Length: 135
Figure (cartoon, rainbow, N blue to C red):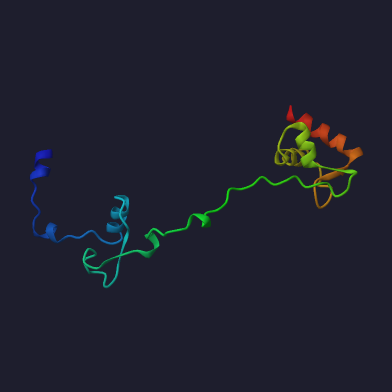
């Protein structure tokens, strides 16, 4: 069977056949080359008028233009000294503030205002709720 495939000679119709666009560009980009786009009429041979696509041309970007690594944000201080934030409670419980907020939402605790912070007297109750949910 493989010998037949290897010895096959194209007839006239097979010899005239051209891969339709955009497939030649896909094949070229898979082989590591630049993709091509065709200009002109639909029946034109894509190999004759192939033009490198400007979208796929590698751009020289200076090193200093690459993004800087993300920095970890500092915890925001409570709005006043007598307030405790969910981030402070999470640090004490050795969990992320995000997890602490999720647990509070699942427990049905309402957000106390514009931010997740409570007076010191109430913070112990919130800390116990988060810690119990952890179990």
